[in-house]
Image 1 (cartoon, helix red, strand yellow):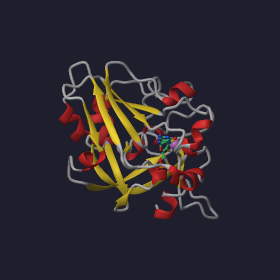
Image 2 (cartoon, helix red, strand yellow):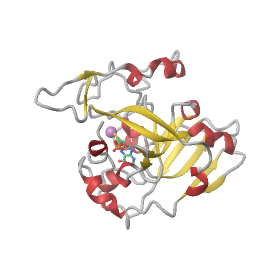
Image 3 (tube, protein in one colour):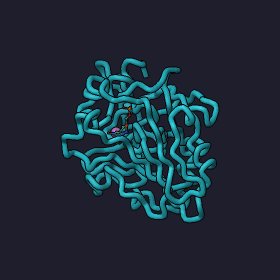
Length: 251
Ligand SMILES: Nc1nc2c(c(=O)[nH]1)N[C@H]1C(S)=C(S)[C@@H](COP(=O)(O)O)O[C@H]1N2
Ligand SMILES: [Mo]
């Protein structure tokens, strides 16, 4: 996906609900100074300064497909390291079953918070084994640059086998918990958005099919549609996490 498309067609409701809003409005986000509190069921809770986080593990570049629940997808060379690197350092206790990601909610920086479209702050969550999976990236950049604000500066998740909304932007808190977190989209519409939200062409969103997708930048005259792949094509790597689970029930 072209850099210009990846940075101008975004979802970031804290800056408005239309795809072009974040690129226009996210200039008011201040990605420095920034801290991330890592807490809850861990032996070594800690408030990390951004500069410390940047040095935790060597930066890697990974091109991931990301598919939005609305049917568009992108392929972006992200820069970051596996979230597992951070998780190992804080030593989760035996009670840590899930990881909750809380993102910035500051009215002074985020005009979209005036709207009640979501219950702020935006919260996402993963099961601990999903969070530990090496594909789960804590991203600090894209295309070899620091993250533009509209893409979730200064740090965000990228969980490539799940719908885009699981990839929380501008994270300020990571909590290890025993119970499945109540995530922002589940709170907003639990019939439409499940906790797992694995990309699954066989489970339709109640209002539209999830069988195909449109790659951003390819939407010319003939609107080429691509078939959506189970787990967004990452099935060989992540399918085992869901062995024995009914993915229609746990959508
Ligand atoms: N804090 C926050 N994170 C968020 C969102 C949001 O509204 N707020 N939108 C999500 C959705 S629905 C998608 S599809 C991706 C989009 O990421 P991108 O704009 O960088 O492509 O971010 C996700 N992370
Ligand atoms: Mo999305």
